[in-house]
Amino acid sequence: MKIIKNNMLLTQKATRAKTWLARLKGLLGKEALSPNEALVLSPCNSIHTFFMRFPIDAIFMSSKGKVLHLYSDLKPNRLTVLHLRAKEVIELPAGTIKQWNIHVGDILKFEEDNDV
Image 1: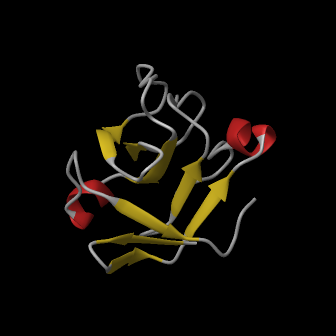
Image 2 (image 1 turned 45 degrees about the horizontal axis):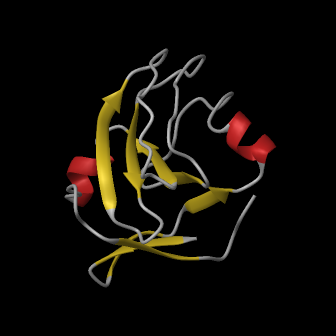
């Protein structure tokens, strides 16, 4: 799946976790995310990093793709608050939010091609 901002391709290495089991597993068991790799949790409005081995960035989004909240460098064994308006969360390698220049209010779009 591709993630796009303002008609600019951010990554082609995104995967959407839509099933309960895929969302439950998330990034557990992974050693790291490769650069520009992303996991999109849908539906989702809160995440944790318990038992993870590396920090991540997280982008909370509305159903229309609007960025609602950002977590940069979320360390292992942490929990985010519940974001009631969020419908999806993109989990990324730490530092990606800054690299992609993502801000609250931005609109991100997806082009689907590989779901789990």
